[in-house]
Image (cartoon, rainbow, N blue to C red; front, side, top):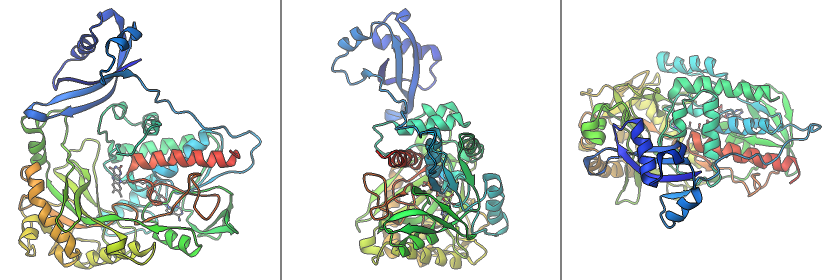
Length: 533
Ligand code: FAD
């Protein structure tokens, strides 16, 4: 197969036009082109003209001649092999079973790949199965009732289940493991388009049934998923893990334990520190969610093409390097979505964002966050970042007035240094509700300074971004893990053999796709260790 990149066509082109463009580009007779598939489709909106840009894999006659003709043209290359190859297969007589703690994207992929290789993993997940968990999560949003073991952070599907389901990442992926993740998602019910859209998303509802389908496959292959099983301790034998202890007093023995905990498992991080597992503090970011009318973002990004069905609701990505040395950036932007209450701890308020596949809610929301680092902002050991988060989240709860209401402020008032007392044209989507106030009372000064500096820069890229009535809701504190559970090249903890830290909580992923990819990597590391390689 031959791959063509940068093939540009007008937004409203016909399917035939694409076939003609392929044959035309190659200057090959139409009969020589036996078929082609779209590997990626993205947009180019430069110079006010919206085009679709394709990467196409073509099955064509006389490939060698074509490669010779296009020698030196970086738009033409052999199609890389993106198939996934297992690193091994469990022997039928193998008695040992690996344990996977956590059933978010990382734990799901670790368990799935292990199961596909015949290792029959046992998954221990503290939260509930996804449908029950959905009810509990709505309990917080509708009735201010938080279930500390079943919520936006904990339960089947992990943190990204109630999300926009964005499925792209900037990780280096020379082995095309992201492709394996997307292929498994399609097998589990995701739309095929996620395989070729440059910035795919699936929204919340589809994620729920996909997670159930992946659970079913793991079980069919001999794995087990045990819900409401919180791991509270490790069973150690010198520098080796021999299993885990559960909150209900039970034990599960295994010499191979994957920790796919997510960034909110603070009690588990504390237990790991007590047990002496090597960890180190790492940088993350804090700030607020910002909401604009989606129509404003569409008009700024798509211009006259706003509303075109192929484009959908527009997203954005913004960065500003502030003069106080901080990076200010948009985080986890959700077009046509809602701001969600994302705490897992009582009397704390944390924001995040989600949307449905249709992305047709009135507002666009995004994290509007500032980088922080352990050296400057929370010195004092691997768990200091947790304390920093907790303090901000408690302050947000108090400023919100209790009952999990979030503190909010109009952007214009934030810029002018005054408290907000009423809403303007943008109705905030956060549930159970917001209290209009002054967010600068709880945000660190360096954040406020950097955010105020960033807004005019952002408004130059997205016209209207500095809208007076845009709503800031806070606080956004869980942008990534505040620590890393460091592992070696063999995927194992630096000082506890048999313990495989993975995913976002261990500091090795940020987002659904990268957590899934890390799940595959850790499954491979476990398989190699179990096969004695
Ligand atoms: P998690 O998904 O956090 O899963 C960890 C699991 O471990 C949880 O289910 C937890 O219950 C379980 N666990 C923790 N401790 C224990 C224990 N002691 N015993 C047993 N089980 C335990 N990313 C994107 O790429 N796109 C998005 O659109 C997106 N939107 C998001 C929206 C929201 C509201 C949130 C909260 C996150 C969003 N993210 C998004 C981030 C994404 O969800 C995470 O990066 C991803 O889920 C990390 O995967 P993980 O498997 O490493 O951890």
